[in-house]
Length: 599
Image (cartoon, rainbow, N blue to C red; front, top):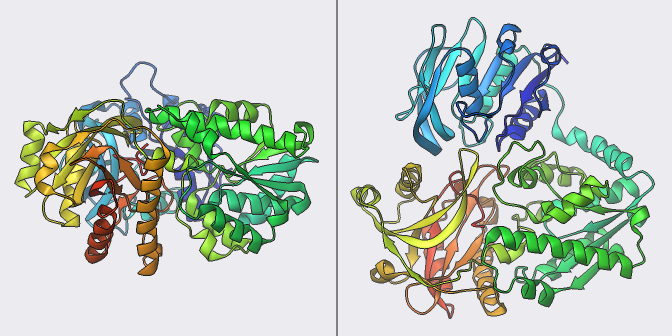
């Protein structure tokens, strides 16, 4: 194993992404979710300590054997791992002002880990603690405005720590930093490409399936279609049957598009559609909490799948349930190690599905891969680019893009401190009485949303959004008013609202306008995903729509996407003209601190 790196999972949302990022540069890694023995670690070329949601000074926080620093191996600590490594070497760590999202580091000295990178560079932060005192031997390699010890190192012993996340694409030189560690420090060379793994994936499917066939839940999205196609190639079409459940929570034209795609792939004769709209919408009646929505939808999928198998004469003894689950679904649902925080429970990780997994009745070919890797695998097995490049769409569908509220409540003024920050940058705003899901310091947050108005300057909006969300007791999401009566923003209120067909129809039309306009102007490929969200925020008698275009590589981190101003304004105006829409906002928050989906 001297040609691999050991990655120790300390519970971070991005731990598996470290392995994936190393894979991108042709370096193999093994993840250890339980502390491996020193003997096992000694067989590797180097060690990486991952991030995590805890504080190193907390009782029960993840630890490693301090004797790893005596192994003579290179060690790179990331975020929590950076602090843990420093603590083992004698440093002091304390709670400080958090940093979430983009930040700029300035290099303080020449060193191996930052070789070939500029003296100032943009990195991706997600932490609340910081190293405040360093022992002899450790030097500060880089700093930010709010964190003196953004990177530390002991070149002689080949120990390095970075407070930011080089494994995410939004750290501009993160790949170079990982290359420097793996090649210059650990001495490893480049190996295989992702496309070369298709035969391995097919072999793995055959091994897991054995003599059984696969009954696949197909949503029409990239993940389930690629997974379905891989199973069909590995096992032959006769051993793979697909089921599409029309939940009533789909986008406009979704079912027709799916039929066309499957017909083009030659799978239409092994495919069934079940109309279950009334059942799903009825089950969501009166449900406000986003986690409860996800659990209900996941349970219903399992119920429908079981009924369909009985109807089609498929017995559980000879069939497996197939899903297009990818790695971000797993880690955001709490991961497999038990150390990661639950950000949101994906429908394919509800209790009923987990029970089937424990019984060995589920096959998921893509759980080690990310969205962009799934696209590459799809192209490698011959799927059309129009299909593999589709925007991601969540399994729970429009249910988690249609926010609900149990009571009416007026908007609040921003705190004096937040209001001062907003006004000094030429904006003004309010705190909306509605909450959304976020991820900060690898932990789930569920906080109020700030709404602002002012000049349409995307760079200023991103800077303001990052600043507001990094402040103590601040919102985890910021939205900007694009269309609607600005004078009425201060009087905004949340309305009582539940999921019903009228609201879903309104959201479906707003989503269709956004998708159609992007396609008409040739802009579809300019964004990675584009959720359109209906929120029960009234400036008059209607509700509000939020546009959430983002760019990402894998869904683990994201920037809000910059649309051409004329397109954004025209899109917002067209949606604003829909009956029942008071205002249209643009979500200007990155991930972290906000998740891509609101719920």
